[in-house]
Image (cartoon, rainbow, N blue to C red; front, top):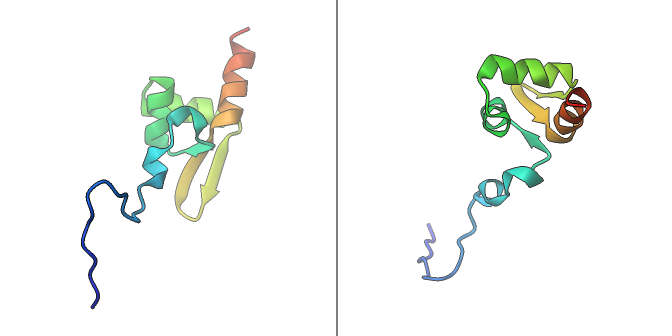
Length: 78
């Protein structure tokens, strides 16, 4: 097997690009991140997500469309 040594100051090719994206630029988030964005509990976050019709299911994973949720919150806050 071929191993490479880590060089200081150079980024390694890992799967850390998803965590490097700031939360306000994400298109979809999971339920845990939706709870953080909305600063509420799980049931409230899921309820707001369903009211906004922002549920996206990929196989067994559940994601939420952030733009639809933002639009829904803007509409109900007027």
